[in-house]
Image (tube, rainbow, N blue to C red; front, side, top):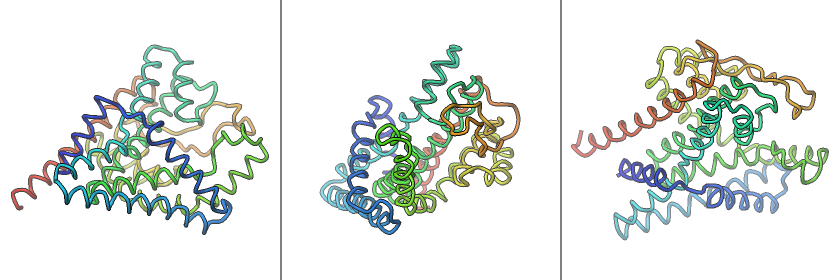
Length: 328
Protein backbone atom coordinates (compact mmCIF):
# COMPACT_ATOMS: atom_id res chain seq x y z
CA UNK A 1 0.00 0.00 0.00
CA UNK A 2 2.68 2.49 1.04
CA UNK A 3 4.83 1.49 -1.93
CA UNK A 4 1.93 2.17 -4.30
CA UNK A 5 1.31 5.53 -2.64
CA UNK A 6 4.98 6.49 -2.94
CA UNK A 7 5.29 5.49 -6.60
CA UNK A 8 2.08 7.31 -7.55
CA UNK A 9 3.14 10.47 -5.71
CA UNK A 10 6.57 10.48 -7.39
CA UNK A 11 5.07 9.87 -10.84
CA UNK A 12 2.53 12.65 -10.42
CA UNK A 13 5.24 15.05 -9.24
CA UNK A 14 7.41 14.25 -12.24
CA UNK A 15 4.52 14.74 -14.68
CA UNK A 16 3.05 17.78 -12.96
CA UNK A 17 5.47 19.44 -10.52
CA UNK A 18 3.81 21.01 -7.52
CA UNK A 19 3.96 24.83 -7.34
CA UNK A 20 5.23 24.42 -3.80
CA UNK A 21 5.74 28.08 -2.92
CA UNK A 22 2.19 29.06 -3.90
CA UNK A 23 0.26 26.04 -2.63
CA UNK A 24 2.31 25.02 0.42
CA UNK A 25 5.11 27.44 1.27
CA UNK A 26 3.12 30.68 1.30
CA UNK A 27 0.11 29.36 3.26
CA UNK A 28 2.43 27.76 5.85
CA UNK A 29 4.44 30.97 6.11
CA UNK A 30 1.30 33.06 6.65
CA UNK A 31 0.05 30.63 9.29
CA UNK A 32 3.40 30.56 11.12
CA UNK A 33 3.66 34.36 11.04
CA UNK A 34 0.10 34.79 12.30
CA UNK A 35 0.60 32.33 15.17
CA UNK A 36 3.90 34.01 16.03
CA UNK A 37 2.18 37.42 16.13
CA UNK A 38 -0.48 36.08 18.49
CA UNK A 39 2.12 34.87 21.00
CA UNK A 40 5.00 36.76 22.61
CA UNK A 41 7.79 36.06 20.12
CA UNK A 42 10.50 36.58 22.72
CA UNK A 43 9.42 33.77 25.02
CA UNK A 44 10.52 30.15 24.68
CA UNK A 45 7.39 28.81 26.42
CA UNK A 46 5.17 30.72 24.02
CA UNK A 47 7.23 29.24 21.19
CA UNK A 48 6.42 25.78 22.49
CA UNK A 49 2.69 26.56 22.59
CA UNK A 50 2.80 28.00 19.07
CA UNK A 51 4.67 24.91 17.82
CA UNK A 52 2.15 22.63 19.52
CA UNK A 53 -0.75 24.54 17.99
CA UNK A 54 0.53 24.24 14.43
CA UNK A 55 2.11 20.78 14.53
CA UNK A 56 -0.50 19.27 16.84
CA UNK A 57 -3.32 20.78 14.83
CA UNK A 58 -1.89 19.54 11.54
CA UNK A 59 -1.31 16.03 12.89
CA UNK A 60 -4.80 15.86 14.41
CA UNK A 61 -6.44 17.00 11.17
CA UNK A 62 -4.41 14.51 9.10
CA UNK A 63 -5.25 11.70 11.53
CA UNK A 64 -8.98 12.39 11.35
CA UNK A 65 -9.05 12.70 7.56
CA UNK A 66 -6.97 9.56 7.09
CA UNK A 67 -9.18 7.53 9.43
CA UNK A 68 -12.45 8.80 7.96
CA UNK A 69 -11.47 8.42 4.31
CA UNK A 70 -9.91 5.00 4.84
CA UNK A 71 -13.04 3.79 6.64
CA UNK A 72 -15.27 4.97 3.79
CA UNK A 73 -13.24 3.42 0.99
CA UNK A 74 -9.75 1.96 0.62
CA UNK A 75 -9.20 3.94 -2.57
CA UNK A 76 -10.07 7.18 -0.80
CA UNK A 77 -7.48 6.39 1.85
CA UNK A 78 -4.92 5.65 -0.85
CA UNK A 79 -5.75 8.89 -2.66
CA UNK A 80 -5.34 10.83 0.59
CA UNK A 81 -1.91 9.27 1.10
CA UNK A 82 -0.87 10.18 -2.44
CA UNK A 83 -2.08 13.76 -1.93
CA UNK A 84 -0.17 14.12 1.35
CA UNK A 85 3.06 12.79 -0.16
CA UNK A 86 2.59 15.01 -3.20
CA UNK A 87 2.33 18.03 -0.89
CA UNK A 88 5.14 17.07 1.50
CA UNK A 89 7.83 15.29 -0.53
CA UNK A 90 9.04 18.08 -2.79
CA UNK A 91 11.59 16.07 -4.81
CA UNK A 92 11.38 18.62 -7.61
CA UNK A 93 11.75 21.48 -5.13
CA UNK A 94 15.45 20.79 -4.63
CA UNK A 95 16.20 19.05 -7.95
CA UNK A 96 14.99 22.07 -9.94
CA UNK A 97 17.42 24.40 -8.15
CA UNK A 98 20.24 21.88 -8.43
CA UNK A 99 19.58 21.38 -12.14
CA UNK A 100 19.53 25.14 -12.74
CA UNK A 101 22.95 25.55 -11.10
CA UNK A 102 24.35 22.48 -12.86
CA UNK A 103 23.19 23.56 -16.32
CA UNK A 104 24.69 27.03 -15.87
CA UNK A 105 28.03 25.60 -14.74
CA UNK A 106 28.14 23.03 -17.54
CA UNK A 107 27.57 25.92 -19.97
CA UNK A 108 30.44 27.78 -18.26
CA UNK A 109 28.04 30.60 -17.33
CA UNK A 110 29.40 31.34 -13.86
CA UNK A 111 27.34 34.55 -13.27
CA UNK A 112 24.09 32.67 -13.99
CA UNK A 113 25.19 29.77 -11.78
CA UNK A 114 26.12 32.20 -9.01
CA UNK A 115 22.73 33.91 -9.25
CA UNK A 116 20.87 30.58 -9.15
CA UNK A 117 22.99 29.33 -6.25
CA UNK A 118 22.51 32.54 -4.29
CA UNK A 119 18.74 32.29 -4.73
CA UNK A 120 18.91 28.73 -3.42
CA UNK A 121 21.43 29.32 -0.63
CA UNK A 122 22.14 32.89 0.50
CA UNK A 123 25.51 31.77 1.89
CA UNK A 124 26.88 31.83 -1.65
CA UNK A 125 29.36 34.76 -1.90
CA UNK A 126 28.80 37.46 -4.50
CA UNK A 127 32.09 36.56 -6.18
CA UNK A 128 32.01 32.78 -5.74
CA UNK A 129 34.07 30.78 -8.20
CA UNK A 130 32.70 27.85 -10.19
CA UNK A 131 34.30 25.35 -7.80
CA UNK A 132 32.83 27.11 -4.77
CA UNK A 133 29.40 27.09 -6.40
CA UNK A 134 29.75 23.38 -7.13
CA UNK A 135 30.77 22.75 -3.52
CA UNK A 136 27.79 24.66 -2.14
CA UNK A 137 25.44 23.00 -4.63
CA UNK A 138 26.45 19.52 -3.48
CA UNK A 139 26.22 20.44 0.22
CA UNK A 140 22.86 22.13 -0.21
CA UNK A 141 21.58 19.43 -2.54
CA UNK A 142 22.31 16.38 -0.38
CA UNK A 143 20.89 18.15 2.68
CA UNK A 144 17.79 19.31 0.78
CA UNK A 145 17.26 15.81 -0.64
CA UNK A 146 17.10 14.51 2.91
CA UNK A 147 14.74 17.17 4.25
CA UNK A 148 12.47 17.19 1.20
CA UNK A 149 12.50 13.47 0.41
CA UNK A 150 14.20 10.94 2.67
CA UNK A 151 13.22 12.48 6.01
CA UNK A 152 9.58 12.63 4.91
CA UNK A 153 9.76 9.03 3.65
CA UNK A 154 11.19 7.76 6.93
CA UNK A 155 8.23 9.10 8.90
CA UNK A 156 5.75 8.10 6.19
CA UNK A 157 6.95 4.48 6.19
CA UNK A 158 6.32 4.16 9.94
CA UNK A 159 3.28 6.40 10.51
CA UNK A 160 1.74 6.84 7.06
CA UNK A 161 0.41 10.23 5.87
CA UNK A 162 0.28 11.52 9.44
CA UNK A 163 4.02 10.94 9.81
CA UNK A 164 4.75 12.84 6.58
CA UNK A 165 2.67 15.81 7.79
CA UNK A 166 4.41 15.75 11.18
CA UNK A 167 7.90 15.76 9.68
CA UNK A 168 7.16 18.47 7.13
CA UNK A 169 5.59 20.82 9.69
CA UNK A 170 8.39 20.22 12.19
CA UNK A 171 11.09 20.85 9.58
CA UNK A 172 9.34 23.98 8.30
CA UNK A 173 8.96 25.61 11.72
CA UNK A 174 12.56 24.83 12.70
CA UNK A 175 13.72 26.68 9.59
CA UNK A 176 11.15 29.49 9.61
CA UNK A 177 11.70 30.39 13.27
CA UNK A 178 15.48 30.21 13.21
CA UNK A 179 15.87 34.00 13.35
CA UNK A 180 18.16 34.36 10.32
CA UNK A 181 15.87 35.85 7.68
CA UNK A 182 17.79 38.70 6.05
CA UNK A 183 14.57 40.07 4.54
CA UNK A 184 13.82 41.60 7.94
CA UNK A 185 16.59 44.14 7.30
CA UNK A 186 14.79 45.41 4.23
CA UNK A 187 11.54 45.84 6.17
CA UNK A 188 12.60 47.35 9.50
CA UNK A 189 16.27 48.29 9.14
CA UNK A 190 19.43 46.54 10.24
CA UNK A 191 19.34 47.36 13.97
CA UNK A 192 15.65 46.58 14.40
CA UNK A 193 16.09 43.43 12.32
CA UNK A 194 18.73 42.17 14.77
CA UNK A 195 16.26 42.55 17.65
CA UNK A 196 13.55 40.78 15.65
CA UNK A 197 15.89 37.92 14.81
CA UNK A 198 17.05 37.51 18.42
CA UNK A 199 13.44 37.31 19.60
CA UNK A 200 12.60 34.87 16.82
CA UNK A 201 15.56 32.65 17.73
CA UNK A 202 14.31 32.50 21.31
CA UNK A 203 10.76 31.92 20.14
CA UNK A 204 11.90 29.13 17.81
CA UNK A 205 14.30 27.41 20.24
CA UNK A 206 11.86 24.60 20.97
CA UNK A 207 11.03 24.14 17.28
CA UNK A 208 14.72 23.65 16.45
CA UNK A 209 15.29 21.25 19.33
CA UNK A 210 12.16 19.28 18.42
CA UNK A 211 13.30 18.94 14.82
CA UNK A 212 16.77 17.81 15.91
CA UNK A 213 15.11 15.00 17.86
CA UNK A 214 12.63 14.15 15.10
CA UNK A 215 15.38 14.13 12.46
CA UNK A 216 18.00 12.17 14.42
CA UNK A 217 17.16 8.70 13.10
CA UNK A 218 16.02 9.72 9.56
CA UNK A 219 19.30 11.60 9.05
CA UNK A 220 21.28 8.48 9.83
CA UNK A 221 19.04 6.38 7.59
CA UNK A 222 19.82 8.80 4.75
CA UNK A 223 23.53 8.59 5.52
CA UNK A 224 23.38 4.79 5.38
CA UNK A 225 21.53 4.94 2.04
CA UNK A 226 24.20 7.26 0.59
CA UNK A 227 26.89 4.89 1.84
CA UNK A 228 25.23 1.82 0.29
CA UNK A 229 24.76 3.39 -3.15
CA UNK A 230 28.10 5.21 -3.12
CA UNK A 231 31.58 4.63 -1.71
CA UNK A 232 30.63 2.77 1.46
CA UNK A 233 33.94 2.86 3.34
CA UNK A 234 34.63 6.54 2.70
CA UNK A 235 31.05 7.50 3.54
CA UNK A 236 31.17 5.70 6.90
CA UNK A 237 34.63 7.11 7.66
CA UNK A 238 33.56 10.69 6.97
CA UNK A 239 30.36 10.20 8.93
CA UNK A 240 32.18 8.88 12.01
CA UNK A 241 35.22 11.16 11.94
CA UNK A 242 34.05 14.44 10.41
CA UNK A 243 30.30 14.90 10.93
CA UNK A 244 30.76 16.25 14.45
CA UNK A 245 32.95 19.10 13.16
CA UNK A 246 30.16 20.53 11.01
CA UNK A 247 28.16 23.49 12.34
CA UNK A 248 25.12 21.29 12.92
CA UNK A 249 25.85 17.68 13.84
CA UNK A 250 22.73 16.18 12.25
CA UNK A 251 23.28 18.07 9.02
CA UNK A 252 26.94 17.11 9.26
CA UNK A 253 26.02 13.42 9.23
CA UNK A 254 24.27 13.84 5.88
CA UNK A 255 26.85 16.14 4.27
CA UNK A 256 29.78 14.01 5.48
CA UNK A 257 28.19 10.77 4.26
CA UNK A 258 27.36 12.40 0.94
CA UNK A 259 30.90 13.72 0.53
CA UNK A 260 32.40 10.34 1.36
CA UNK A 261 29.99 8.49 -0.92
CA UNK A 262 30.95 10.79 -3.81
CA UNK A 263 34.66 10.81 -2.95
CA UNK A 264 34.97 14.60 -2.88
CA UNK A 265 35.96 17.31 -0.41
CA UNK A 266 33.29 19.74 0.72
CA UNK A 267 33.18 22.55 3.27
CA UNK A 268 36.15 24.85 3.57
CA UNK A 269 36.26 28.62 3.52
CA UNK A 270 34.44 30.60 0.86
CA UNK A 271 35.56 33.75 -0.94
CA UNK A 272 35.16 37.12 0.66
CA UNK A 273 31.59 38.32 0.42
CA UNK A 274 30.21 41.81 1.13
CA UNK A 275 27.15 40.30 2.81
CA UNK A 276 29.34 39.33 5.77
CA UNK A 277 29.64 41.93 8.52
CA UNK A 278 33.44 41.98 8.63
CA UNK A 279 33.95 41.10 4.96
CA UNK A 280 35.85 38.01 6.08
CA UNK A 281 35.72 34.49 4.84
CA UNK A 282 33.26 32.13 6.46
CA UNK A 283 35.05 30.51 9.41
CA UNK A 284 32.56 27.84 10.50
CA UNK A 285 32.99 25.58 7.46
CA UNK A 286 35.52 22.86 8.28
CA UNK A 287 36.77 20.75 5.40
CA UNK A 288 34.78 17.55 5.14
CA UNK A 289 35.02 14.56 2.84
CA UNK A 290 37.89 12.74 1.13
CA UNK A 291 39.36 12.51 -2.34
CA UNK A 292 39.42 15.23 -4.98
CA UNK A 293 38.16 18.79 -4.72
CA UNK A 294 34.55 19.35 -5.75
CA UNK A 295 34.22 20.76 -9.26
CA UNK A 296 31.27 21.31 -11.63
CA UNK A 297 32.09 17.94 -13.24
CA UNK A 298 31.00 16.20 -10.00
CA UNK A 299 27.46 17.63 -9.99
CA UNK A 300 25.87 14.95 -12.23
CA UNK A 301 27.30 12.29 -9.90
CA UNK A 302 25.69 14.05 -6.94
CA UNK A 303 22.20 13.97 -8.43
CA UNK A 304 22.86 10.35 -9.45
CA UNK A 305 23.66 9.53 -5.81
CA UNK A 306 20.30 10.93 -4.71
CA UNK A 307 18.42 9.02 -7.40
CA UNK A 308 20.14 5.75 -6.47
CA UNK A 309 19.31 6.32 -2.82
CA UNK A 310 15.66 6.90 -3.74
CA UNK A 311 15.59 3.71 -5.82
CA UNK A 312 17.07 1.87 -2.84
CA UNK A 313 14.18 3.14 -0.67
CA UNK A 314 11.66 1.91 -3.25
CA UNK A 315 13.30 -1.51 -3.41
CA UNK A 316 13.36 -1.84 0.38
CA UNK A 317 9.68 -0.87 0.59
CA UNK A 318 8.89 -3.45 -2.07
CA UNK A 319 10.78 -6.18 -0.19
CA UNK A 320 9.08 -5.31 3.11
CA UNK A 321 5.68 -5.20 1.43
CA UNK A 322 6.26 -8.55 -0.27
CA UNK A 323 7.42 -10.12 3.00
CA UNK A 324 4.30 -8.87 4.77
CA UNK A 325 2.07 -10.08 1.93
CA UNK A 326 3.44 -13.64 1.97
CA UNK A 327 3.42 -13.68 5.76
CA UNK A 328 7.13 -13.90 6.45
